[in-house]
Image (cartoon, rainbow, N blue to C red):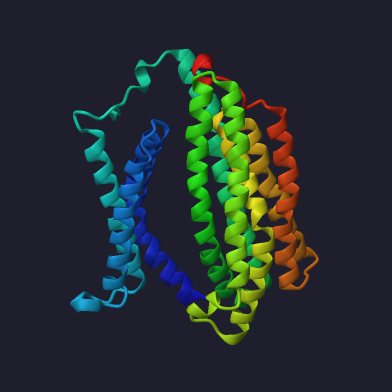
Length: 328
């Protein structure tokens, strides 16, 4: 739809100015979390969130005398909130009593440490590119199969993200609780923490999925959907609620493997699997042997069951159980 494309371009032209502050804020947040201060990025993120919501309300519809900017207003709100978050974190980073300092020191690092950093970073970077691009292609295949399904898919993703946000807190905790124990060479404690976090993540997703299932006939009505899209959104939410635990489990294993530096296994179970699983499945059943959209969605989501088996296999190999501090 040319109008939708034009709106997307209008949004991105503004949003592109927030990628650098988003990256800097992300690095600062990770640094604070792994040093045992997760409350700092939590507060800065909360301030950014409130800023974003307030500015969206003011700029999209032009409330309280502000200009009605529509899509551009939404992008401006997001961009400003990212800059606010970065500035807050940089102020805290550069305080005299801060244990973190931001400076360019890569050139001063020993060659062996540089090599180790690159060896760990490149698979993670490749994984993120493959995973993100793969999800985009899955969405394109869904759109190719049924353009009218896009509103329902968008609603389902937004509602599911409420559960995923809960899990993302578990992911941050895994990096601290498992990574710090491995760094202190308390291997048995790291293994115990990893096992406990798996059960916590599963419980979190079970509760979230139950809430999605119970409210599947109600929550889509909060969005402006036509009757056919509303019915489809309800069906997709039911499917999502029954299978989203696979995402929670696999992502937990992802964070555990990553905390131990097993980035090659991360690349296999996340990025590579996305292409050989959901991307391949959605391509076959949308463009080669097209099936009904609902069954296509079920087939793609059911790939999570395969991912659970693969993730469990890599977890039990225990290549992630090592002291990265000693190896560095």
